[in-house]
Length: 171
Length: 113
Image (cartoon, rainbow over all chains, first blue to last red; front, side, top):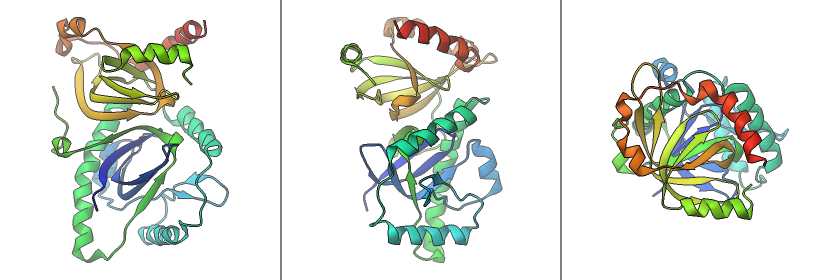
């Protein structure tokens, strides 16, 4: 499948790298085979945690991230979500906006944001290849999906092969 | 939201090199390829300039970039001649984050006029 490899940065500093499946006019984004990189990319990298993270849409109308859930549970949720995707209504922009602002106020003003996040992006790219490898080595046919709500997004960038060799070229 | 007057001004920036300061104080420089009524901005050949007081300005290549409008604080045209005459590797500055509250207050008073 010819999809775009896409980086999305959220307001809480996390970076999602994955194949762009779909997006809408609200800039809500659906990614496949996602690698989430935490705000400080280093910590996540060293922990060696190599599982895709999932943003799911709960019944209460809030987007939440089951980040404490074990790997198996996450995968179950992914499959469940894939099944119910067709009958789920698209996320309302009003609710999302409220949460996005909260994140912004609470999490953003901390030290060294610019550099840290960009380091995170580069780490995420490396890990992307790792995930693809583990998938072919008998993990099965799981595919992780992330739905990113638009108002959490700071910026997006797609990488063609020019940008693939990590880390970034410094001038 | 951009009103017609502001949008017209933004049109003057199209295909020019612009400098953007985001809400969290990052500075991104690139060629403006497009914008919309929510000030979402598409930059090409963009790079981020990371300021620090210990070393010169670092430039991180970002490539094609979309910045969501609600994170954008300032958009300004970059004087390319002036910019080329700067030796960024020898420039030192504290980041915008430090002076961000001040900038914000000034902008609020200016932009509402």
